[in-house]
Image (cartoon, rainbow, N blue to C red):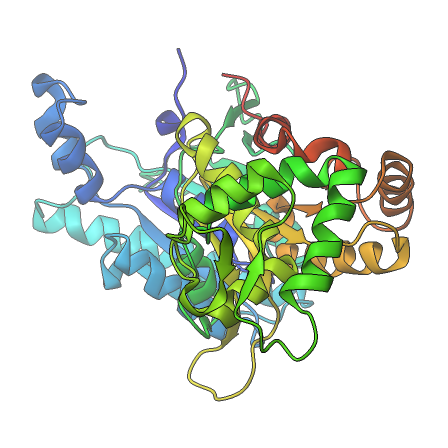
Length: 457
């Protein structure tokens, strides 16, 4: 049975576009490092009979072809590949004029001619790192870059392969590939007798949220929070907000008791919601107390009275969503699950560029969640969802998915999704979870992530 490793190449040309995710994924999947093979042998995944051959295989070379405007991004990709185990010498940068066909063609031709000379020289020297197979394969992944870059890089490589001279040592069949953001599949074109084929790669390359930030030259203003605040109480509030009457009890208690007057009273009655009182009194260390003592209200991530008030004002929903993700993280193979992600430009003072309330990543696919306890203002809900979707794609590429978790009624949820699909996005890329989903939020989120991950295993 065919494996994506059958399509790995000795030299990969990557066209750098506006988002680094496709380049990072393609580079990792379509080339190798000796570190990769050593790890496979170490863990018993490679038979001893072939271990020697694998360990003497030339490590993959990557050339990042970029425009002048894309230099910074190309340099960050280069650093990322080096941290991932590639040698500095094996990740090169080449600048082209992105809208100039001749510039693109000449760049690709020069890179390939240089690579050919390098391989020939290695064989003359009998280098231990020289490829022993007798041929080398050159690949082009054209997911990134402009249309001009894609078309003319493709034609240049195809022409170079077809017009090899007597000393030609390269496989006549180049490997052309494209990473499909909709299906998370790496697609390979038909070349010669080799039929076109696709592989699902959604879980083959793990990119962390910190990786995504660094690739964009961002850094978090504060470390993202990985532990939910008062998680049992947040879960109880999810169930309460699925019931309109109970929601009204909570809202009235919060207004009349928690935020009453000038806030001078430090002992207030518990909310008349037994399931919430039990959870809150336990998590705040006041299980035997008849009243909620605000002065000593701390525990499970809540440090003091001010944090409790902030949590009660709506931040509890972020904790509830984070907990829902953590509950299905192992089953869904999720990486980091965190909340309160606030990136800013690395090395520069100033406020955050934007905020993700909650986010997780599966392989290299980002799932971003915007949270609000608002229930009826469709315009506000749409604005929050639209902004979150724009930022998610800015950070995670077209593979990213966005959800809004709110307290809206089903009619509002449906209308909002219809409008977003009509005005902004393709079906499925965004999701709205409203009041009807809150009581069983983990299952609803899990179902959506499975649908959007494209993983049918």
